[in-house]
Length: 143
Image (cartoon, rainbow, N blue to C red; front, side, top):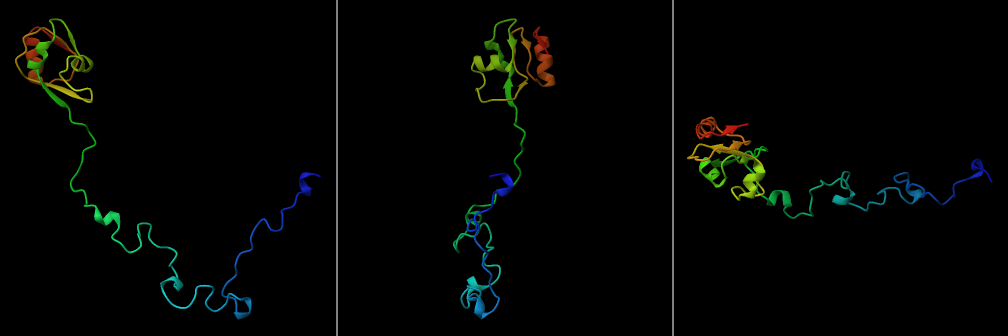
């Protein structure tokens, strides 16, 4: 036996039902759809994807969400007073702020705002212009 000798089994594919071709065929007149009604009409099989059998669809039960949600995460504001928990000469980063318990572990962005800073620190966190001047006035630096 070779590859070109292989043949498809005669019953492996079912023959397509031919409808609407006369009474003698057995599938004429109503074409197996019955008499009247919604199911006998064209387009019946193509019901909308959200159709739930006549009940109020879930899409219409849930209220529309109004407004606009920004995809950008808001920065967590931290006053410089909170940085007094650090020692002189310490480096301030997001990870060190989390270790000291100043911000939660879930916080992604941080911004420092003006406050009463008394320590000399090396800050590697975004800060406002007034916060930068306050850090430099205390003898620290912003990178």
